[in-house]
Image (cartoon, rainbow over all chains, first blue to last red; front, side, top):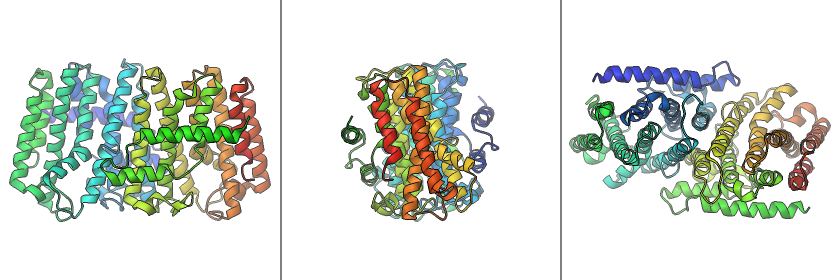
Length: 286
Length: 286
């Protein structure tokens, strides 16, 4: 399969849907809606929502059934970046080469854009249109899963540990805990939500969960490896290359990629996009 | 009826439930869970969740069916206070006489406590226990309603207008728009969610919505009147007394209280707590 073509096509579908779901920039309060659109449409690979669509397909579902939840997950990912970039947090002025939301619109608006995106994500899932017939129980389960993955025991918890670990030398086990929650939890739930919407069996959902966790960790380590090239945050942030060294980090990514692909051994060729995405995450820019 | 006794009893029920639903302070990351509990248990009248329970009762439901959603609403209210108090926003060092979350735990943790509480609110509703038999469709509708009331077209939108209006002389219509979204939307949805959980008819829900909107606006104006006594924010924030003067503000509260009580004319004595709460809000500390 041609992964680049697949990713490009899905990215377009997701961005068209995001454009449709978000209030227009002309809607009051206009500053807020302009800042929301600025933050959402600054590029980005849309890897999480693509994983949601690909997981729905992997279990034999139509990707359309997962589109709204996929977009909700991208809203949550974007909110987390906006809040992470705040001066009180990582204090990053740039995001994907453009001024971060707090630089472009001020800190107060950046906090509120994040709050609005997180809220809007749950509204999107809860108001799934009647065109896509999904049981209310399924949507409720997905909301519960996503909220658990993103709350104080998930993504937000991981971010707290990340902040508290800055400047400290972490044990590898604590570093894995940090990345598991800060990054892998949202990626894992992107995958399992897609599988659930596509009608996956509990065995398939469990396999997808293993896949998502492995891909999520590999994704964070690859990010750390790339950052170690640019030396960004090298001294202060807890990273795999900083703690385990570059070679062991790369070996860990290879192991996790293998693990992700193995998780899908019971799946047919409809899971090929997931397999290719795992390999892509394991090798990008290295 | 004895309103003070009613409020005290409901407050205790809500605080016991919050204590049960929230992760213990000993749970990792402990800083985060300590800060969450610090922020939630600093007093507060719990008026929003009490309105949720009282609305379930008003339509003939058991208040227990609304307890989890009531607590979720209190988490959302608390998150909004924590983010509003941030230095980049209203920059308030004290909340209910104690250091605000950002003073007690730092700005980064305060942002993340707010994020965690908002996320946890939706998890609470989505994972409603099996003991309370509520249809998944009802819970999904409530999640959609709450998210709509709290997002960019609701509470967050109101907060943006509030920030943008600081130092400006607003027209009364724009001031009402601001308060409708910043304050009344969450109060209204606290009421309608309780009514929905209690099994209210669509006519009853519509009446409760009118009640909630009126009470919500009255609540904000009363707050402004109290603040005008202490002179806090008088010069810079857009308030009713600042724009309409104290007498007209008090008349507006009386009108809204009357309107709230009239909305309930089709309800029997089970709605007495709602009636009394409207009168209490209209007269507190004036």
